[in-house]
Length: 509
Image (cartoon, rainbow, N blue to C red; front, side):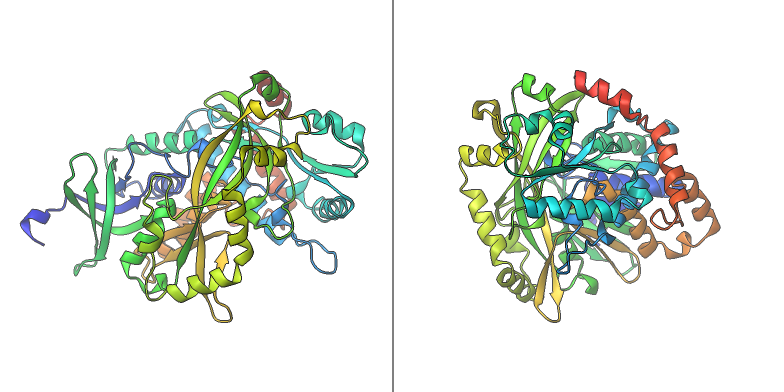
């Protein structure tokens, strides 16, 4: 290495991106192996500015209680429950870890980032009502969905959801399910809290304004990263034994630069997001719920609409969406050249194939992009019949990059989940994709640890520490109702999730 390329930082671990994923992995590693030195490189001026920001994600605490796209109806009319059960369990695991951090005062009080808010699924029309009833029957027998209730009684629905039912034409059948255990999570606040904890260690260094441009494996087996300091415009160099790329939409280009064989064939399809935000405080006071509907026939999973109470910076807010749009940016503060620059010889064919097989998605995005304000208000009117256009404004949410991967039969397929891509030797891992993302961050990072630290993960020392932080570790909440019951009882106490108390507090905000 040339003298002018002097390495600025040498670490055991480098985390690229200061979002919820890097925060979670960093804290897990420091708890499991306190001796590790960690460097975090973030291109923006603070943590949680992109996908983890409260205004840039749904904040639902994706637990599959109300998200109907996680329970697909088969041709024979039966309901697929596997994905819903998996996501529900993953969210409980996240709650266990957050409860440990909050309960041991490693981060701020739980009331600062998580609140109890009922989750509802609401549908209309005979076919959708039939689907919701079958979904309810399929899920209610599992401990993970204990407390799920169903009604098609308009009086009960009006008590549950006055804003949704007021002024509605009741000649069409309607129905809803309710889950009191639902939550709202401010992932931005949570992420920043975890980074404050990490920065309390003298051997953890978080560098902002560092835009990572390249990474390559050095002859000595270490990863060498090159970044540009956005403030000083100087090129800087960093070395580490292990690298995690958790840069949201920016992960794919960096993964490609790593040249690990496991990255071959991956592409990305960027989708922008928008919300309608309520400006009328009197309207906001009338709704305390997360109400998810059913996507229109032919619409992608990302289009599932919801009328969503949020608690952001201690203030009650009301959002509706998301509305999608197409952009070539991979990050909200990215470049319009991101998509073009991501094209490589090994992923062009999978990306073209995925595009050909997803023409309805392209049509949907074009339709979303040309919508007027009144078009969006009309969509909201299906959930809030007495909506007034002047009470709502459009705000831009975060960027999502959906994963495209090779497929032997179709050439390339578009995935709507998340994907961990790890080097065979465990020296590098990257996270691609979007939903359910932040809500399942702990389980995703446990997967990274299993892929990249297999020896340590099999040791009694790490197992016992993980069991202390995540009491259900190594057990199944899906298959063992008692494990789920005990977990929820403990996290409710540690995270102060007293439903009655929280509902009253939230309704006064």
